[in-house]
Amino acid sequence: MKLAIVEDDLIIQMFLERVASSIHFDVVGTASDHEQAINLIETTDPDVVLLDIGIRGSIDGIDTAKVIRERFDIPYLFMSGNTDTKTHERAISTDPIGFITKPIDEFSLKNQLLKIKTTLEKVVDSN
Image (cartoon, rainbow, N blue to C red; front, top):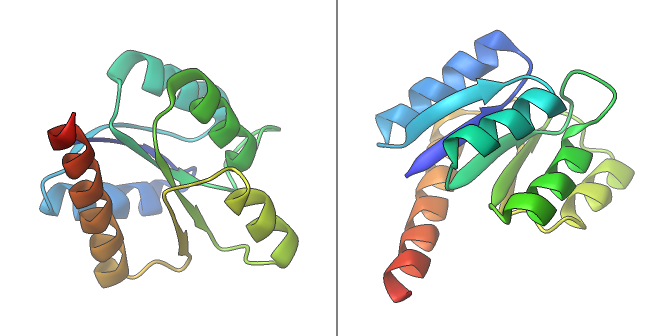
C-alpha cells in the first residue's frame, strides 16, 4: 500500500516514514507544502495520504485535503497539534479517513495506519 506524507517538520517526517515502513507501507515520498503535496500525489498515485494540517505556505492542510478529495479522490488521515474546536470542525467537514493529535505516539500511529490499511484492502478486494 502506497503512502504519501505531507508534513513540514523534517524530524516528524522521518518518524512517520520509519513507522509506516515498519508496518509495510511503501512511502512514496514526502512534501512540506501544498504545491509539493499535489505534485507528489500526481506523480506517485498513493493509496492514502498522511496530511498535517499546519503545513508551510499560505494553503493549509485542510484546503490541501479539499484539492486531494476533488482532484484525486484519495483518502487522507489528518495530523495536527492544533485541537481547537474551529480547526477540528473544519478538518472533519472534509471527510478524512481519520485524525491523529500531535504529539503522535508510535503505538497510536501504527494502530491508525493498520486500520486504514485493512479498510482500504477490503475495498480493493470487493471491487
